[in-house]
Amino acid sequence: MTKRYLFANWKMNLTEDESVDLAKKFSEASKSLKNTTVGVAPATLNVSATKKAVGSNLLVGTQNVYYEEKGAFTGEISIPMLKAAGIDFTITGHSERRNIFGESNELVAKRTQKALDEGLTTIFCIGEKLDARESGKTNDILAGQIDALTSLLQKKNYDNLIIAYEPVWAIGTGKVATTKEIEETHAFIAKHWKDQTGYDCPPILYGGSVKPDNYAEIIKVPLVSGALVGGAALKADQFTKLMEISEE
Ligand code: 13P
Image 1 (cartoon, rainbow, N blue to C red):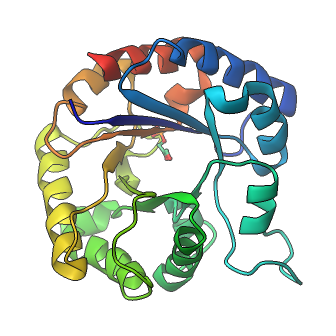
Image 2: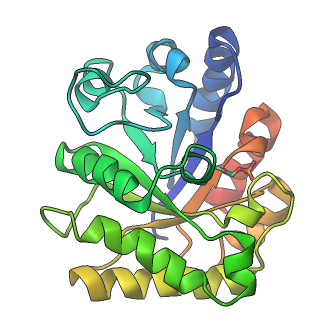
């Protein structure tokens, strides 16, 4: 079986104590997993305490990272800061960063390229809004997001890159993409990546209203290597169930 991944994006939720508690539960539950790598991305303030609490049992990452090393960039965090804190990975280009905070394809690509060049495992998120899906523009949107990155990459083959396909209309809405939509879209991403870089596409995760009652179907879809989970990752029982499904 190919390797699987399950990542929790806690977004702007949980205090430090709550993050530590939940991460410890995830860490305990993940001990028996054979084929699934599990990680959590707490709010930035809680990342260090969470990492200290779980050690190497669970990957801990940030929800974003900036490409400059230090300086007058209020509100941002740098890759050296993450490395010094022993942080395992970062997310970039989440649709909430793109759509609520106005991050462009170019800005996301610069953050991602720098993180990859510095050897940090990076979950690069892409996804289309509902109007793009309905007007048949999904692939154009995804290609634009991907091309902004591949045009910047110093080398084209990165072992520590993971792509997360998260259709914006499926995030936090309870509206999950159909397995056909997921299969077609992941196939497009994989082909486009290969066309652009000459290398096989990194693992692609699906994200958007993943829950225990739909994950068994989703994880069986070709070219789905796991999930990036929001709401269901805030509940120990639900996320633990996703871990179990991932191993089936
Ligand atoms: P939900 O699982 O709450 O839809 O969130 C998905 C997501 O945005 C993960 O990054």
